[in-house]
Length: 246
Image (cartoon, rainbow, N blue to C red):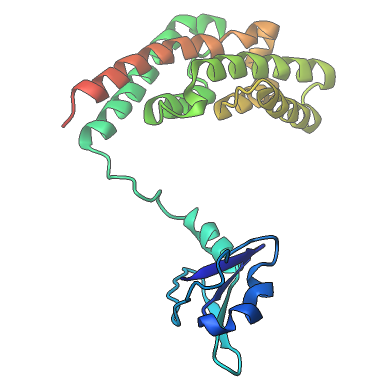
């Protein structure tokens, strides 16, 4: 019977014959772990163990037990490098999984571009950069938390309003941008509405002279209004992905 004693980041594996049970009891019972309720149980002489991280193997003079110490440092280093690799156990996307989100993004920008032609006399554009990021979230990862409708609209409206307030208080410049971004992140965490594209709305307003005329209407237009159009296109994209596969 192989027994392991876990202590913080180290693992100690012990193998011993039954004759040395009493001598090893203090080691194996450390931390109120009762590994042996019946002292008559015979232990196997060999212990088979594997661990991804490297460790050290030592024996006492009598050769009665082996100790393996595996540090978690190697595991942490492995986790660090794993973040630079594609997600494990993820199958390659099909052609339809690539085509339909891309087609949805094309349609979204085409519709918003057509609206720009209508709004051109007022000097307002619907094709703002944050909506491009919203397209990536809604079409490429519709099941992610950031694609939830609550997250999207709550963050879009709240962060846009924060940008207007920061510009009103501090005017243009790095102070307004820094304060607006910090407040936007705090707002999304507090309201549990994390939606990364919305964090760019305050900076867009502060630096966009043509948007200043909107004042607090900016909280609804163009960000939230554009998201309504993108949400409708997302429904079409998801339907096509589920029903027309190739």
